[in-house]
Length: 140
Image (tube, rainbow, N blue to C red; front, side, top):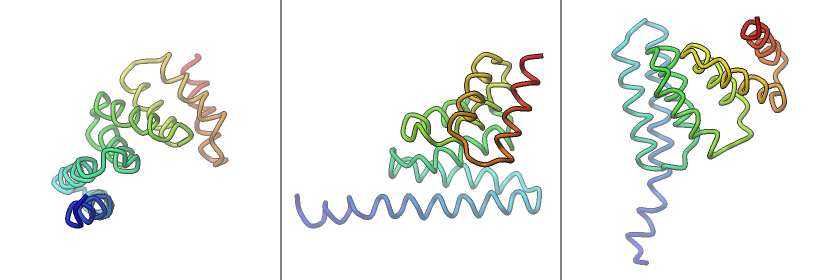
């Protein structure tokens, strides 16, 4: 491998993380100013990060959460959060958020499975309580 190829291989993950960080900034600005254009810019940056490093679970997570929370695009959110779980199976928040996306998409059984998985691996007391409440609501 030439030095140029080696350096390019090293730079891609770094650039991916920078795009992810910029995407988070756009999401923050979108939340702060209720600006949908900022959310679009965030999606673009998360997508660039993923293109540079297809194994970068955090960029999939950030894009997936943004898809369901800000755009109501549950299909894309589920797809991204599923990829997070494939890359990082013990990422509890990915299970929780995918459970919410499944619930909002009307897939009760898969939502229940994700909230149950969150209860097995989650550690945050607040979100554990939220997962229990979601399960009770779905089981009614």
